[in-house]
Length: 400
Image (cartoon, rainbow, N blue to C red; front, side):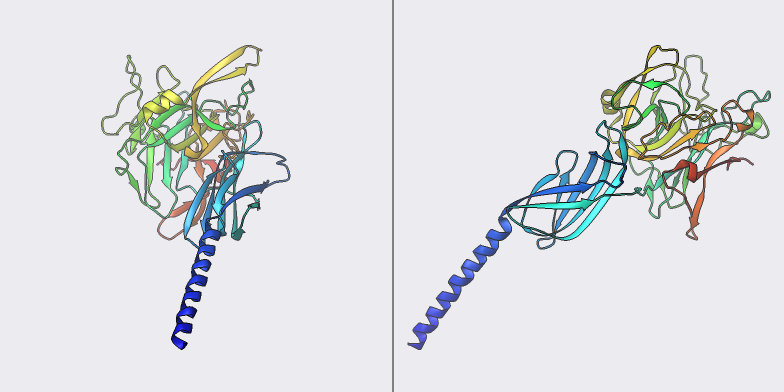
């Protein structure tokens, strides 16, 4: 009798366990429609869309992650459970102008059937970039007459991080539009507000691991890898450059310095040679190109329309570089400044010469990034995506 009761008890316990297990499985497999509701990061932003963004849901019980592309939807279907949520991306106005980078987090969020609505407050943030433009020398050394400048122009790309970074495939870009142009732009959305519009693209060659930069190391990209002190005593010796941008022409206008490797020329608006404007009235950027050269040239070409000051309808040609590819962007300007030539999410202001674009005292001076701190082994430079705050206009670092 006792044995019979014992077996009955085991049977009852097994049934209860089975029902419990089924209930638990059923609870965790119930699909839940999760809707994310966002609060703008500023009172001045009344409405916005996602230019690009990702929400990551971490299931704390199962240890799995699920991602939602916010540019496509703010709704995702998940199993009920406990989640941590992180959001990161860039928001734009309803007309497509990129406003700022944003992010948000919320931990231990209970998601349960039949649906869950989650409120997230967005905050503005500056993504950390490892490679930066440490120095931009576009004014050049004045010629003997003091009327123009030599070709001793250069850019310095610097590893501002604590990890080794490879520079292979990183492009040097000049903006299609100038920061002193007064044109009325006719496209919607406005050019310069959603992408980095570029008309000069020169790329560091390599298979992905050929050009490592340890923390604090840099690359010098020169117009011509030549010792210009042989031409003028107060010029720059660019024979030490790591790369030069070279433009092949029928008349051989651009000497190819054999000792200095060439950048890979993807595109230039110039029919002859590309010379960065010595009035410092453009924006410059470095970007890790997200597609091959052929695909980029085929799919990212753009024509921009504007009305000139004389009322004539005009067109500029260039290429759109997505914001997500851009590692660093710097607007340059002078007293004739009109507007930044990049989306504000890349740079909120401009580094200025502080003088007129034609002032001859601009020659022989460079835009150099301010020092933020020192780790003891290398220098960390200031990078707030606010060029007026980050740069000084002073003596070139390579000047002897």
